[in-house]
Image (cartoon, rainbow, N blue to C red; front, side, top):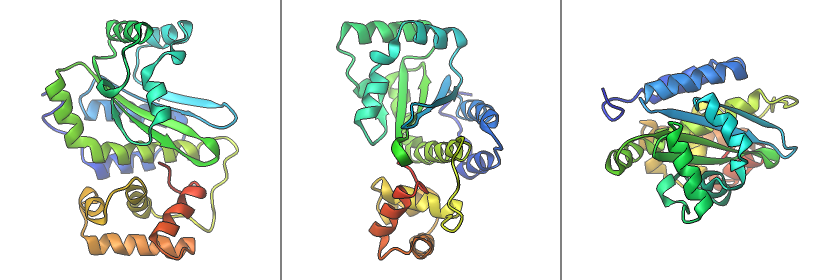
Length: 242
């Protein structure tokens, strides 16, 4: 069975993330996600304003060590591209024109990372930055079909993964009186990244009326005047991240 044949249900994946109890669990979850989507690799990495970092993923250890030893962080077009963007990006749309970038890509392919990639930049509270990345070895046509088919679900998974990682961040205290339900977070996140209400409802497999209920509930919890104000407050308080 190929990676285009079947994908796991979004609600099951979100539930699996929600049940995680620590950073070690996230490593297990990302391996399950990789297997569920039948792709070669998945990676999650965040950095906060203090420079603290956390990462988990399925890249081979020899590639991780080589990446650090070679100082590839300075030339990696994926990292540079994610810092410059707010929306998901296919690796083929990044700037690989430089000699160092091309050499880096060839080295990555030689280590089994794959010739295709898709990265979702995420920005959170207090200067936190993260990216959620998928990579695979396949044709351009197959990869385009895969990312087009799964884009919306992958965005929700990436942000849910990041939210869970933030929950486990040392020193982070939750907002006791301003918590949103998982469905409210999903609805507000989609609106925050520019989805229309119709698109958001379609992504969540609910009616626009039900979506409106979630959005209004979130708005009241946040004490916001309207939906735009609610999204802004949710972002500022780190309740949703984009």
